[in-house]
Image (cartoon, rainbow, N blue to C red):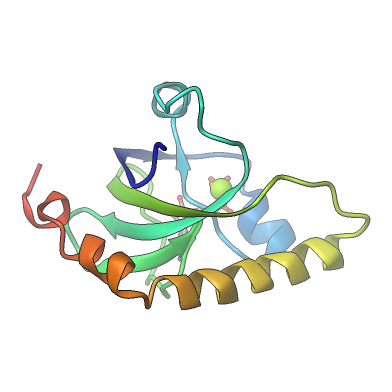
Length: 130
Ligand code: ADP
Ligand code: MG
């Protein structure tokens, strides 16, 4: 399998839908970074660790599970994807989607407490400054 997967790249601007429509900002990578992902990576929702500009390592679920003081466009975001939560799906309402995201975050929260997940948090990938 392809996980855990370590990815880094600059945070770029999207349409701002995450914050505006969902109340949940999702940091975007450029198309180059996305296109460099393994081709056999199943589309869907993943959980893992995230680090902005060599700062603290936070839990994430696309949305980084941490309250930041502001935007961090142009920053280098390092992530490690550890597990697959669910496939992509269409929701019949925005409320259903927001509810699903809350559930994703709760599931990610739990999975990241396991010893295997905690080990990756300490990986030298996050402690070496490059
Ligand atoms: P965009 O379409 O530009 O990605 P979003 O509404 O999805 O806009 O918001 C994402 C941006 O919000 C990130 O690029 C980052 O600068 C900022 N941000 C602030 N807090 C967080 C967070 N906890 N998780 C992800 N992004 C965050
Ligand atoms: Mg976004």
